[in-house]
Amino acid sequence: MAKIVLGMVASHGPLLGTPPELWTGRVQADLQNPALAYRGKTYNFAELSTLREAENFGPQIELPVRQKRYDACQRAIAEMGRVFAEVKPDVTIMLGNDQMEIMGEDNQPAIMVYYGDRLDNVPFSDEQKQRLGPGVAVAEPNHHPKEAKTYPGHPELGLHLIASLMARDFDVSVSRIMPEQKESRLTGIPHAFGFYYQRIMGDTTPPTVPIFTNTFYPPNRPSGKRCYDMGVALAAAITDWDKDLRVAILGSGGMSHFVVDEKFDRDFLEAFSERDPTKLLAIPDNFYRSGNSELKNWIPTKSAMDVAGLKMTLVDYQPLYRSLAGTGSGMGFAYWR
Ligand SMILES: [Fe+2]
Image (cartoon, rainbow, N blue to C red; front, side, top):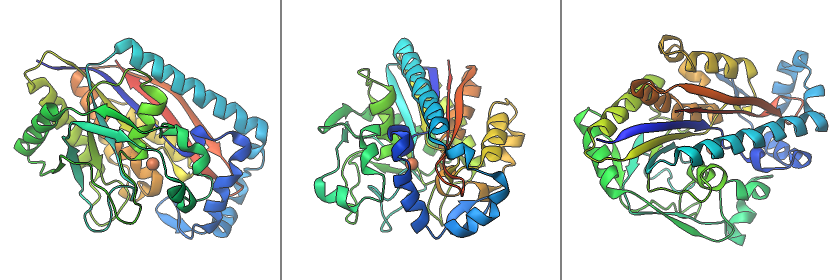
């Protein structure tokens, strides 16, 4: 019987791979964004600056503060890597999302299990780099290697998870071949998955089944409750798997971004760390917009870990502010073992 031995959740945003003096590059993207999502509504940069003026972000975006928080995140990532190497799972299930990288408007599955035998992580071409938003290219090593790399998938586990989820009334989409999208012309795994390979798993890259949840794009975003239930179903599927293997579940993304909402992040963390999911599942769905929505990759990790009876350790939380409007990313890291 397979066994869950490790769970992890980690933010993956580009600021984690961008020296603090260059964060202003991403502010250009904030200035161009007409719909910065904050507490269920959207604002342009000027409107958001006015709305949040009283929070006085000036001191929070001073370079020494940015550097201190960035350094804390690097230490947290290193700690996650240390724990991963120490536990050394035989196989991983990665919970992430696509951001119009390999899926597009022609087909956007709510939940998709990839059961192919390989995961390619492919760097941007020069042409793709030119099409990236401001301040993204500098952070490429956060999720892409210098040269394309291929990692093992786990078709057998993938097919087992698909059958188990279907048997538990999760009508998942499936893919044996990693999708490609005409618009982005990107190939290989999206950044949510690449982050774990680049920043946490190091040289230990066990066979992996990625599960894609559409956290970002209406009209078919699964609810927090659905994601929670999926984690419970995944835990049951692993226990049912007739293999003597040690399994890790790795959730990728979040916390609040591209507008930092420290209160939301801290309330989320409090609810998230409670065994009883009542508070967690009471968070209104309109808080899960834009990058915040990636926390829906954390929720099934948590519910699976609760079933497995593993104990959560919060490694760190850091609010990385980059502008007077409070844009940036809330970065959180936790594991269970
Ligand atoms: Fe992301």
